[in-house]
Length: 280
Image (cartoon, rainbow, N blue to C red; front, side, top):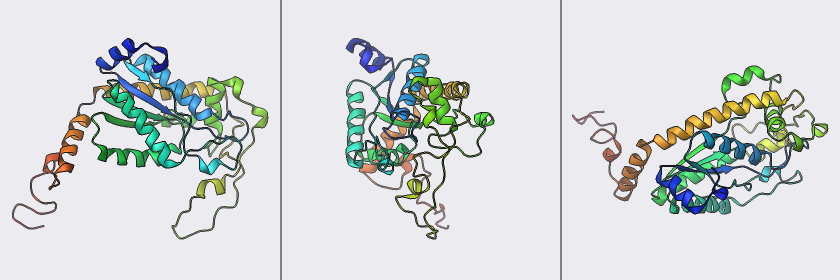
């Protein structure tokens, strides 16, 4: 069920039954010139809605279209937020879900780049001593690894065969295959002996595509989407049944306020690396 489509009483009942709140994370950015700018948000929102219908009670918050996409600002249509704004916004949304009675919040991303800031967000969140538990999952383009057998291209990525197949299945009226073209990798940044720069991806793929959408099909997209929804259904059920994370979270929050060797977190008694006899 979707947060915006139900009444307040229905929302309270879902929370009381142990339901989880799900926040889909997308983006507004180009995928070459054949997919809609809201592609990542459309696909992850539809996956969340389909999965939640099979794993109730789960309530889907309105998707977050906005994210950090500075690497895509050279292409028309990107809307990017500053990292701190994005982190604070996501925290407020999670906190509001908890205030409405949900003890677990699941972030589900349809945009690969979200993993970078979500990693920081979740680490930062650990120090806030919130009462709810937080989970994150990235929706894989193929749904499951063995769906690789349906792929015709040796390399696939942003706006390529898999992502275009999903779009042809989910929202074919928004796909403009006449604008599709195979990605041509630009000259990469020279070898910097292990150093990285902020421009790694966009310097290689300046056309906002890293793959070939030519072999994409709606049938492949149907298979990939069904697999992703199946995986998300299993994940939602696992999160709802999870008791270990909230219990560990409570122990961790107590232990971090009174630091000591972390026997409270389940570690063996004694200092790390020191045997009971005092040797190493």
